[in-house]
Amino acid sequence: MTAIDDARAHLVKAREFLDAAVTNNEMRLFNAATSNAVTAGINAKDAICLKLTGLTNKSDRHADAGTELSRSGPSGRAMASTLGRLLKLKTKSQNQTTSMAASDALRSIEWANRLVEVAQEVVSS
Image (cartoon, rainbow, N blue to C red):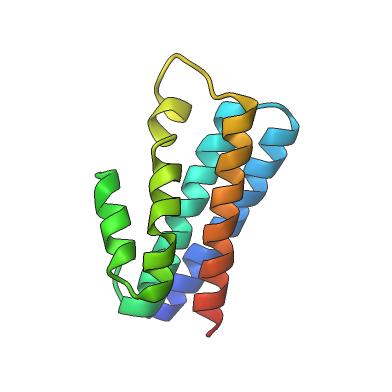
């Protein structure tokens, strides 16, 4: 597969996880909704970076994802802080004993939606 093919595949995954986040939020499954939103945002980041640079990093370090997105160009730089806010919710939604609040889940979906929209614009251009 080419980088653009990979970017399109990540965009499809981003949309799927965003849809799952919305569904889980409607069911009041706020941890799952937030976790899905985070995964949607990560896949959107991958799509943006692949389209703009031909590469994406699969580091487990959250800071690396934001840096990578910032370096991909103006579209990525504009979304890096949104990705950063989203990634701050990953550990709590997936690994901690405390649960996500409804407001946090909703915000995470809004942030993921912004990332997916930008990824759509970038990949389509």
